[in-house]
Length: 253
Image (cartoon, rainbow, N blue to C red; front, side, top):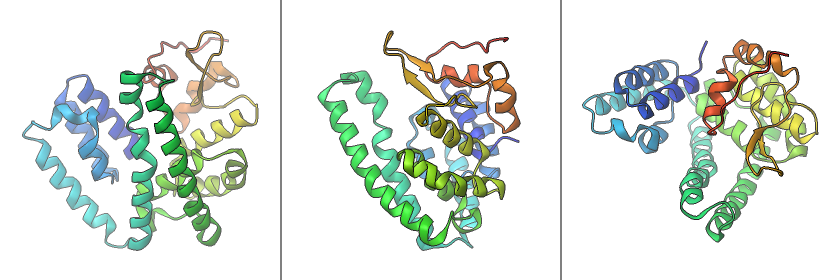
C-alpha cells in the first residue's frame, strides 16, 4: 500500500507533467493517508502550477482540517520541536538545485551552502540523539508521520557510527508501524554503502570519478531489485532513476 509520502510524490509528478486533475486527486489521497506537512505543500515548487487553480484553497482547507484531527492527541511540545528540526534539516537542501543550476557544484556559493547545512545537521543530530537515548523512537501516535520522518532524516544525514547505533531502533520502529518501511530501506542502503557492502534497494547513488556522472552504488542481486522494492511499496528503480535525470534498465541477470 502506498504511503502518504508516495502519494504526495505522485501528486508532484502529475503537477510537473501538467495534469492538475490527477495532481489534486493524489493530494487528496495523500491527505487521507496521513500527509501532514502543510508548510511543505505551500512551499513546494513542484506544485507551483496548481496555486492559481480554484481547487488549491479548498485542498489546503481540507488538509488543515485533517491535521487538526490528527494533532488533537499529539505530544505537542515534542511535535513542535520536531517540526522545527525538520525545517532546519530541509531548509538548505531545498536551495541545492537552484544554487547548483545558477552557480555550479564547485562554486563558493555551493561551498557556503554545504557549510551551512553541515552546521545545522550537527546541531539537529545532538537534539535527535538526545531524544532517542532518553525517549526511544517516537511513535506516530505521539508526533505523527512527519515527526517520525524527521527523526529518520536527521539520522540518515549523520555518519556511519550514528547509523550503526540507531539502525536497530529504526528497524523496531518500522516493525511496529512507526516508521515507513521505505524510509528504513533508505537507511539500510546507506548503512551498507558506508560499510563498503552492496546495497539492497538501489536507493543510493554516487558520482563516478571516471565520468563525473551520477550512477547507482553497487546493488546486491540487481536483477531482482524491483521485486524487493515493490514488496515495501517503493516505485520501480527506473522511475526512481528519472528523478536524477538517469535512464535505467534493471539487468536480466
